[in-house]
Image 1 (tube, rainbow, N blue to C red):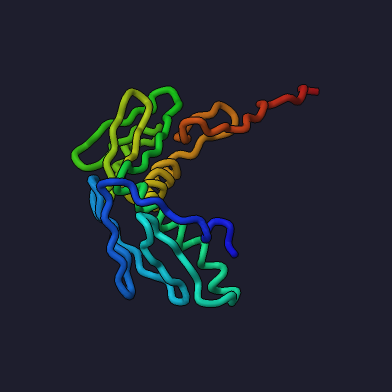
Image 2 (cartoon, rainbow, N blue to C red):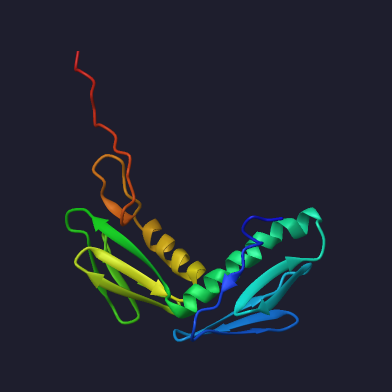
Length: 179
């Protein structure tokens, strides 16, 4: 039995879940999310908890068991509390500002970089910290990764965009002597 898959998902107050033949719909105070049900797995609501079970012990069903439970748990957390990721910009002259429904980043290039936020994702900017938030964990992580990829932190001075709390392994500069 999957260690993750056998754990039930608690349904907090204010969250309603609809389980159909092919889909699972989770509604909460922050919004609504939909996920398809994987074949070979069963999803039931019992005693204010969601239980994911599998039909048999085939390797493919065993592999999907924990994944389906984790996806449902992320949907429940997303519609009740939401997800956030924080990015930090380091570098002389590196700036970020909100521009309509997106971000305008000055990252040392000859031009400003504009990043349009996807639907369902919001961003706030405070000095050099960008906070990405939304109800879908996948979308929040993808948007944060795309913003970080615009200017990854370099190992010598640490300039670039990094996650808050991310540790950048630094390299020393030139250490050779002239002969």
